Image 1 (cartoon, rainbow, N blue to C red):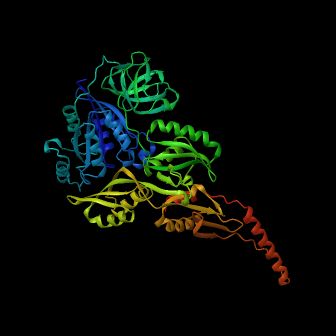
Image 2 (cartoon, rainbow, N blue to C red):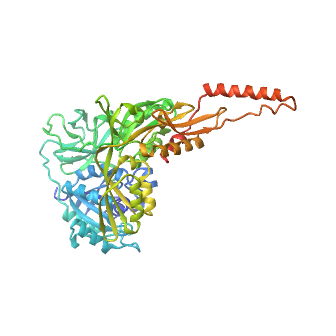
Image 3 (cartoon, helix red, strand yellow):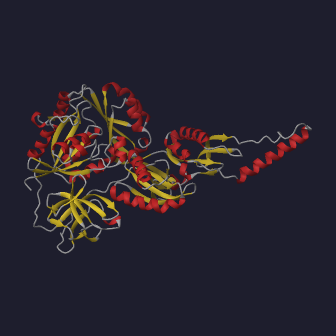
Length: 589
């Protein structure tokens, strides 16, 4: 145990964590040079294409007689839960800060998470090889913001490998070795898991007490499920079987369990016979922030979608889902996500990994409603919002947000946050950068806030947020009617002051994406039965007079009148098929 070190890498998105991890794997000889590739720990295609880390990934390395267990973590605010789980499995954290960007919102957030866990933090100023790097300025900010000493800060470059050996040496010297007794009953914390069709549920564990070997009979203390261990192993970074895992080590257990819900992240694994008396603390349950409906394009794919969500839930503990049905889209699931990027990634993973065609409804947040009868409801689906006459109070979630932006973009950012109903709580200068602490409604963030923030700041602003409380608001249900029939999947809950704008925008968008029919189609936006916007989609019209070479005016009028009656009959009974683009257009307002 004296020669064992567990640590993770934390940073803001795009500060070079994965590249630094690549160099560590290279210089420790964990992966031969001929097998090296960029972002080697990013296992999913979607991570490589987007250039971001989505899933935490452990790997074991050997360095100068020490065994090092590294966990590479994501940097985006939507995947903070992955970071918090990683921090609970280690004793130290390498804090990476970009020498060109400096301290950003997620840097602060991750440092506070690490300090809460009592971890040893090793500050690293990365990308010092870039021509526009300002390592001394960034080091000064680290000293002033977190109180680090000059001797603690390491200047490095993950790209060219500068001082990566010094980081590994610092891990061996500064990070404490894990504590735990091999002779105690087994206690292993499940910090992640995945499903394998041959080995069942594979639990990623940090062994806190005792030891475990293959063929041991184990019990999960939370779900009470029992299983026989098929295989124990470590990450190199692929699964590599070993004889046993002992206290202090990070590895995996192939449980053989076929029921994915039995092995939850945060559960404690112990032996069936000589079991531990108390489970490990585990993790606080994460609360979804953004809700949207996911429906299969083909109705017969519903069972496959249910199975796919179950397997994805095992791999992504922050995903929540429950069945729902829609008149327009049929049977599907109401899913809860941590943010818009999380929603995009889950949707893309379902389509790629499980070959599903999906339609997503507009993202919403969870509202608290007090009715005139004194009942309290939580509503995340607009179709479940009671009529305005039955609502006494409706409350929406508010967040505490932090925006860090270069001083020259401050005016544009303040204009943006003011348009999003935000309140500025604190404004502080960090050198040539400004830190804004805001309180704002979550509903204003979930659609386009992050994209617009990046746009007005030329990509330099960073953003992080946490849940605050629920506050009263003037919110209404905006209904969309196509050919006088409400389309539930297009309904939205919006602030009354913005309802008219949303209604007009949405009606105009739908007019452009719904195909023309043989009869006139009316598209309307309504609030509580009152129409606030309307657009008419003109009908295809057959030239019924083309076959007439001449003739009296009365004959022509007779044909036109017959056509008019036919169109009227069609309008009464005709069905309008709404394409997928119509539902996507809601997301783009």
